[in-house]
Amino acid sequence: MVEPSVPRLWRAVLPICLICFLYLCSFLLFFCATNSLIYSTVCLLRANESYCAEIDQNKSLIILEESIQKESSQWALYGTLSFAIIACFISPIYGSLSDTKNRKFPIILTICNAILTGLIITIASIYQGTRLCLILYIVANIVNGFGGGTLILISSCFGYATDSCTHKEQHVQMIAIIEASLNIGVIIGYALCTFVFELHTRIWHILLVHVLLLVLALVISLVFLKNRSLSQPSTNNLSQKIIQPIYDIHDLFVGLKQNHLLISFLILLFSLFFYDLFRMGSGSIVYLYLHYMSFDDAHYAAYFSFEQLATCLALILLALLRRRWKINDLYLAIMGLCLSLAAPILFAFAQRNKAMIFGAIPSSMFSIYFAVCLRAIIARLVPEKDKGKAFSFVALIQNLDVVMGTIACVEIYQASIDFFPGLVFIFAATTRIIALIFILIQGLCVSRTPELLSIMPTDEIEEPILENQSDDDNNNDDELIHA
Image 1 (cartoon, rainbow, N blue to C red):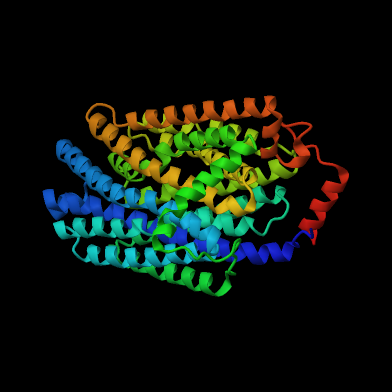
Image 2 (image 1 turned 180 degrees about the vertical axis):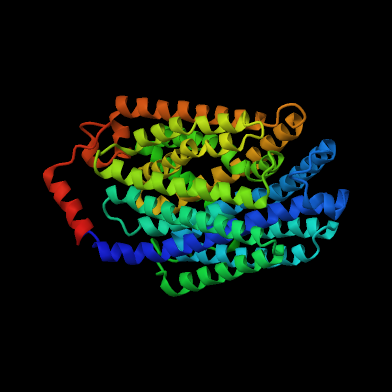
């Protein structure tokens, strides 16, 4: 089989990177705007406008602020659950569409749905400070659930991009490139949030930019993405198509079991589940916590801009580790998870100390290694025809994380805000330690079970910790890079 040239790979991945960049940039604008919208609306329902304008600095009415924080977190919980519960059922359907129709179709559906969601929440922002605003926020999240959200888009993009790789060694590089574009989108999104909040502009202005970026992403997906179908068009009726994802997941598990890889796959999923439990459920809680630590919206956005910039630098280092020192993905995932454990501890005991919060960035920047490397390992476990099912199942696990993580984070934060607001970050450290235990078990299984060596590149079999490629393999990689 002739391997694709570098220009062909770039033609495949560049539109995906642009789509991911625009989508994440717009998503962060949406995220910042909706968090500010909920917080300000709840405050205006309980206090006057002058108090709400200085709520982050005015600590004279601490009991009222804690009450506003609790109600805001409750509305955030309602919104997250209304989205995530629906998305849990939608994720397998989108994965099945990816494998049976084409890789492009779920990407277009998700972006179209996000545009509709953005229009609804933009209308809601016009009624800021009223109950109608909060009700429309819930409606927007319900609509967003039918599109699967960011997780479905990212999973579909990974499936589309890695289809262009005939050499499995290229998977981690392709995924790392997409992750970099996602993080650049996050950086620009937070930077735009910082800029517009400093200008004290209206929230609907932010949401309008959010919709325009999504429209641009939709145009790129329609024009530049190819229709890639891995199987014959389905002739099933509607009811069969609805239950088809269940059979697809069953087939995926049967195939993994026959290849003695099912236990390995489940361990990776459990590890990812605990790693994402706090990360997926803490978005609104981190926003509220930083406001409790006297951060305003501009400082909140600036913090995450710096964090994502550091994450991009960590991804550059990841590329060097993979190519120069030949460290495999499993051990890079373990290293990243260990290095990231200090960040939630610093957050937990910050006590309004902004230096400690910003000091968590050098630790949190390495957590991206776990996500990148685990996706690369999963991509090696399954055949090309089942990749959409596998990534959609990962998205399903992450949507469960959104539901369970949000409930856990909101309940812990509401219960502990009176005596120790940072307790929720102790919970974060605990979940990461559990994820670390699972991934260490996976490493032990790889070293002791020959069948599991397939999760490493084929040239790593003789030494699972370090990649020992032959000179011919190195020459082939150099040709791919410099072609």
